[in-house]
Length: 345
Ligand code: HEC
Image 1 (cartoon, rainbow, N blue to C red):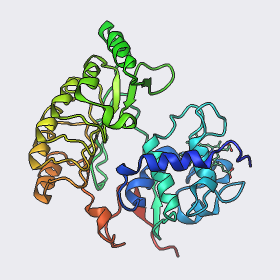
Image 2: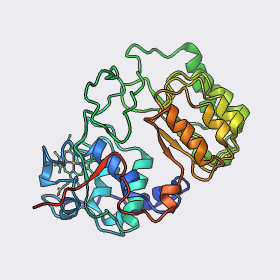
Image 3: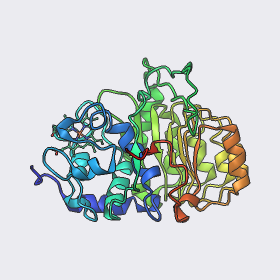
């Protein structure tokens, strides 16, 4: 199998660069299983085994595919799995293949960190075949008639209008912010939707720099973690109609900043890790009906605050880091993507 195209060094750098988002150990059930379930199992699971590879059980995963093992525990650089997910989008060998979106850099970093930490897969945990995947462009499937008592009700994905046309103000804003060295990229070829990752510019990013973002209504992903933005700067984001993913980790953002987010109709994922937010911030999030992931490690929220928000948004996965710190008892209910294997025989 060809391995020459993969640069282990680049992969290591990527993992390091993203580490502030993954403090402590990677949790298989929370961090890895959902990725495999959503992006791999349809072709490497109970129904199909492309390249003779199954990724849904521990034994099959470590057995590998037609070319043998795909993971070398402790060494992401030597793992075929990491090579496949980091290949350029145009490469035939990339996973998921051509017409699927590549994994996000965060997902790639999580898998890399998991392998680097020894690729620990708890015994008896299997990944369930994925339910039909929520396509962001499709109408949310509201009338699912089977309340099969899942751990968490599913959250309908926001809709991205098919006829979206960027405004003239958007082109102007793109030009202005581009001059300041900020690269705003389409999330995929041939779509108007855009993403921007300002983590890379770090402390050079100020409220003033991001002000033009308010006119870029095609933005679906904005990463501001570790930058110098403050509550006031979030005024640039508070009316973005299609913003789905927002990273504010390790910034000076407080409850007042989170108050500005309560009108974001499409927000799916919000990272507030390492900020000074309190329970008051959570009250501002109660009306966000598409919110599916909330990261609150190392904040001032209390278990009561979390409980209240969870009651208002039962489908929301709230990650407070408690799960990461506690020595996970194996009898605990695993994350929704995984289930305990029935003892065979
Ligand atoms: C749409 C179907 C599809 C999806 C989704 C998919 N794969 Fe694949 N995968 C394939 C096919 C087809 C092959 C064989 C062709 C090849 O080697 O490129 C393959 C081969 C592989 C191989 C090489 C196995 C071997 O022994 O040669 C690995 C590793 C792999 N996939 C990992 C993944 C991972 C990880 C994901 C999820 C991130 C994933 N795949 C998602 C279709 C898929």
